[in-house]
Image (tube, rainbow, N blue to C red; front, side, top):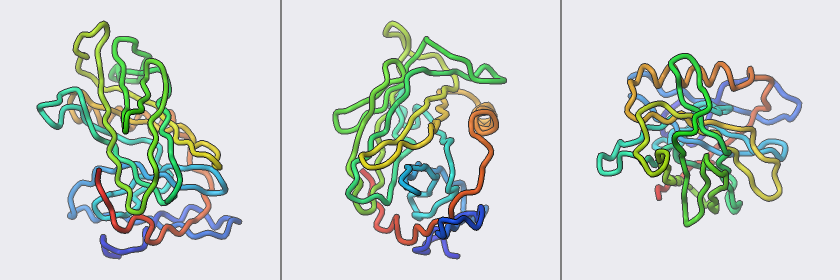
Length: 228
């Protein structure tokens, strides 16, 4: 299947009683590395998260709950990031991304609670922080590709120290059950090998083993992508 195909495919997880078809597409290795954004969809009235490539509009992992980002990709804003972005096929729905209180930092072997920094996510004047919770919201429109601003701050107004940080979030919307917790592993000036190890730890220790997932057709859901 072409990377530009309208249909979005994912791994066939099970033949579920729901009777929907889920496909998953995989970009070929020689197409280059994909930096996945978060995609919010629903099944059975519950919001779910997937990873997707906003450049091609294709779902990478239909059940993804771990995402990654780098602070300081723009040197003028060393403590900010506009990743991960968010997409959705729930056109007309106002989605809230709830930032859960509590921040953890990578020790080299696990994540441990850390009170010396806070990460906030902001869009459209609303925000949530790992220090106090809260949320930011947006209306899902056709081809949504929203990139909120995430910022890390140090304790007592100091610059944050380099490291790998774990932020927990949830998606919610009126008329739907909230999503399971999903996580973003932020890197602030640490080695990429350490960043990858931290992502693997979250995937292996915080995300439950996948069960039978209903198969869903998301054909055309991300056509007409648009970036803020």
